[in-house]
Structures are given as C-alpha cells and as structure tokens.
Image (tube, rainbow, N blue to C red):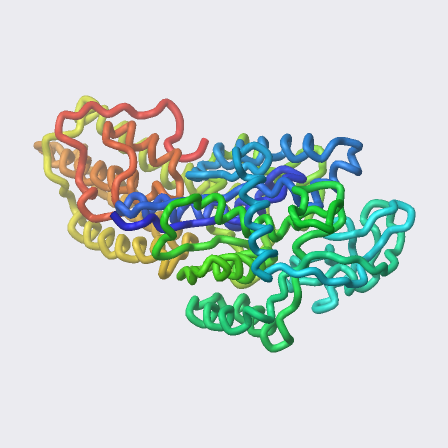
Length: 524
C-alpha cells in the first residue's frame, strides 16, 4: 500500500478564537481536498497543531493578567471545537503542551541541529524595553517592516512574508507599554540559511511554487539568504536545550515548522505533501520546513496551496455587540454547510478579500431556495406518488438524457476542481450549484406528468431520475458540505460518502422507504 498523501494546515496561535477569515484560509479548503482524496480511495494523513508557545500568547496573557498556559489551553480548546463544528476533520492535531514526548522530541531535534552546525550562535542588536526590563521579540515588539513598510511584529512580516530580526524594524516599540525600543547586544541562536542556498533553490525550482511565493523565494536568494533567529531570551515557550542559553526559549516559527514533522510521526515519508497556509505564514512552510528536512537528508516533493488574507474590515463585526465574524457564532447561526460553502466561494486567492455578511446570507439563500427547495419538492412527490418509497422505474422523463449528459460533463469538471493538480474549491461550489439548478428545472418541467389524465406511471421515472441525482450529490457535494451530504444520504437510506464518480448517479434500490429530515437538508 502506498504511503498516505500528507496534507498539512498552518498551526494557529492560541491567543484568540478562530474567526471567519481563518476558516476561509487553509482549514476548510484543506479538509475539502482531504475528503475528496479519501473518497477516491487514496490514503491521506491530514495534520496540524496549535501554536501554543508563540509570543502572541504571552502578550495576550500579560494584557489580561493571566498565566500564558491558561490562555493557550483555553483558546486551544475553543479552536479545536470550532474545527470540529465546521466539519474540519484532522487525523492528528499536535498539542504541544499535552502530547506525550513532544517537548523531548523538539529538544532532541534542536540539540541535534546545533551539534550538526545547522543552528549557530550570533550576537546581534536586539530591541530592548527599559520599563519592562525585557528583550523584545515576536509579538512583544511592533514597528514597520524594513522590506515593505507595513506594520509588523518582530520575526516575520505577515504582509510581505519576509523575515526580520526585530532590531531592523523601523520605529520599533514595546507592544506592552508602547515605549520606543532601544538596541542592545544579545547573543542568540540562528539558522544561517546561506549554506542551504543551492538546496533551497533546487527545491523551489522543482516544487512549482505559486507565483507570489516564487517571487518571495527568488527575492530571498537574490538579496542574500538571511540568518533566522530560532531562540530568544523570553519567559514563555520551551527552553533551549543548549548550554549557554539558560533563559532562552525556542522560537514559535521554528516550532511551527518542526511541529509538522512531529505530526507526521515515525511513518515513512510520503510520496508527496501538500501544505495549506496563508501567505503571511508561508516562510515557515517553504523555507524552514525544507531546511529541517534537508538536515535529515530528505528532499520531499511538496505542493503549496497559499491563500491571501481574508480580512474583517469592520471591527464591530468582531468586537461589537453582535460579534458577527467569530467562527463559533457563525456556525451556530448559519450551520457548517452554509459557512463552508461561503468561505470556499470567497476564498482569497491571488488577492486580499474582505468579509461581507451579505454574501454569507446569500449563501444561505442559495441553499434554501435552490438545494433545499428542490429536495423538499422531491420528497413530497415521492410520498404522494410512490407512498414514500423509491419507485420501481428506471430514470427517465422529458430531457433526462440531456440532463444526464450535462451532469456527467459537469462531473469531469468537478473532479478536476477537487484534484490536487487543479484544486479550485470555488469552482467546485459553482459546479454543484449549476447541477442542482439543472435538476430542479428538470423536476419543474416534468412535474406536470403527474397531472395528465392518462398518466399511467409516467411520473415515476421522473422521480427515479431525481433520486439518482440526489444520491450522486450526496457523494459529489460531501467534500464541500459534509453535514448536509450525510443528512441527504440518511434520507435516501444510502451509505454516506462514496466516490465522486459516475457510478453513484443511480437511484436507491427500488422499494426503499425514504426518511426525509424534518428540517432543511443543507444548512439550517
């Protein structure tokens, strides 16, 4: 049996809840691909983790007057619950503070890299806050990115995805008290990337990076690959297991990259890996993770699905009385089907997009007025014309052959949109909507067969045809809307899931008594 396709999604920092922008980024999209490949019979390993030791957790704890471990654990539980409620099903979620052996594994990796010369000590000017009495790194320091001038924390600019060393931030100041930072010499541990120039350039050339990520990587090579700090003097995080750095903690970005390897475990490395991440986090996936693999003598074929930022421009949607942008609140109000299809339609590829509550409401209307309306009419017709059972008839009716050909052509496009090579979940949603509209029109046109004076069972093939499409959609739509697809499969008394293939375009067994749900099939 072949090794599983390895799919990863960026570990989120546990300094806050998930909002709709997070779901529109890597998580739902990665779950769609995972579900499709599994339906095709391909083994999949789908992993992530939670970045509990990032500096943003410590900053949040300081501002709230809480312990950082309390902040990390509370938001970790909220994030994993939101994933579950939105239908995102990981095989393994690394929990840095709970998983047995994780701290020892990370320490051993760090120590080995230091012994091999991959990690080396450097003395550099580092931001220092005199009132707080601490060196500033990560979220503890804020300024302007020296590369793009955007507002940035230390370590990584989430706008241009280029690293900084904290000391080169423009106008650097303490995020806690606002005091301008002063440069102070500090000896820290770094990964110098320049020794990996050839290996990285060869790796990037063979990977087929998305254009913006390719531009970033080529710029890094042209400007001279930097040294990346992988530890800092800090109060929060896992301790550096190297003599001479007693008050230092392992950097959160380094840990996020290494966490992916821990999540994969001791399995044989796969034939390919597919990484889902926002562009602002791409450095960890495209630069640090390959370097860690090179250190193990591994060059793993990898593919990147990189999204831009999906921003919430109206802060009242997050912090206002209504709280209309948090994942938990939206799932509670709209259901996972509606929210998933919305974030896939609005997924920011190649450009930044903004959350629009009206578009989310439109996604619910599409499900109600098209998908659920058609299914409600179909279940009612089966009850009235066939005693609630699948009729003893082959699919037919006026226009059925045309509709069947159209569905099969759409199926080929749908399979392409689901495939790793041409992955486009927005296209998948549009294709599924068009299929439902087509079968709904077919049902309306043929509904008059039931009222002909000499109907003579003419309407039963029409019901069988629509039931065939319903059964197919229970499989074909499952990667996008698993909750509704499983509800539809239960109503049809068929197995949940199934391949996204033509063979499922058949009605349930004749005589099967249907079990329609009391409410909507998709969404609620």
